[in-house]
Length: 295
Image 1 (cartoon, helix red, strand yellow):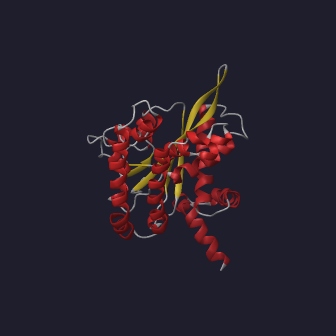
Image 2 (cartoon, helix red, strand yellow):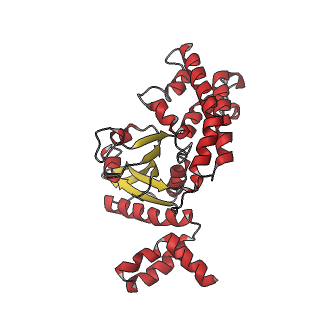
Image 3 (cartoon, one colour):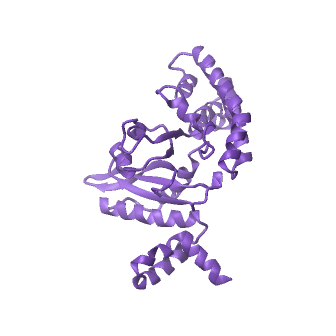
């Protein structure tokens, strides 16, 4: 994973048993998924547990790593982007799904109706923003799986003009609004910090970058579902064990492997496996062996 040129990063809450009740701890995930740009490395995810959401956590998780980090605009990643970082600055690539979501919530007619709000409260500016962003997503769906050079060529021809026009239009609309207006806040999400727009538009200059951070969000989906099935992590050590198990299970699923079958076979073979051959049990290597044996 640390050899990856690009990683997706995200985190979510997990209850941790504490004196007097439960407190919010975190599970972090970092995902390598090069399939959108036809990369050769197999997909994988690793998870880490922490008692809090301090910036020291991603700093520790990615110590010594340099590449492209696709994530949301959480400030805890900011130390990774510093020019004086050792071994060098990480490149930030922000998620357009997060930006779109803020406008979509203000343009969601069905959502307003379900909440008992009149449909006329829908913001026409938000609706127009969603349409403009969706046009960029439409282009991305057509180039998914192509090589970086092909993706970049299409983006320069088709996506960049749309993004440039969106940039001008958003700034014009923001100038008409109070800074406390919900639409202004949605627009500011893309501009308010130095380098924020540059991080959103990094995909226009690198064919390896995805438009969204959905790969990390998919990796965390099992954690969200799991919270409904178990009460809490009983201790910090228990949280670390959960992170280890999520690492194994999610990585197996990403490689289209049944986690239960894989783990059953690995646990049976591991006691007699020399340390020098343990890499043969990694999901992608195990899958190749299974296909070869079946043939």
